[in-house]
Image (cartoon, rainbow, N blue to C red; front, side, top):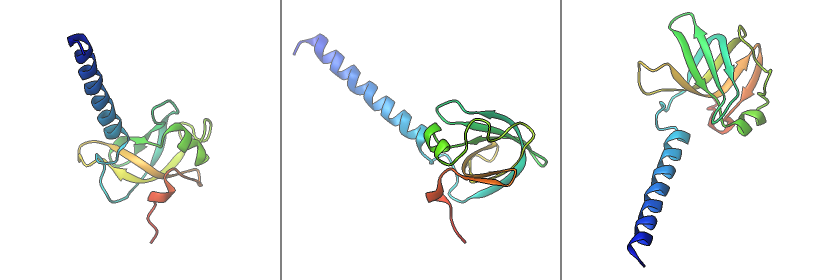
Length: 128
């Protein structure tokens, strides 16, 4: 194998590792607390784009939170689709908040919008 081929192979391997670890970090839950938290508020913004649909939720106590839902397909399977929620709708979010105390970010496992429940990650919902 010539030097150019070796360089290409090494660069490809490094790139593959970088992309794989980046995807794992993005799709993992390691950034979030292990316990569920409930958050109540009002929807400020709905974004159905990838890689994950998100909601901006305003709370009375401490401002606006970023709520991450599942990937678009998983979110759709829960029944939450474009038009399921709009600005001003009341919402209750059950999920795992960021381990960083100053970061207002949560990964939702369940959301309830105007009394309609959407189980985004049903396998992660802990029953009492």
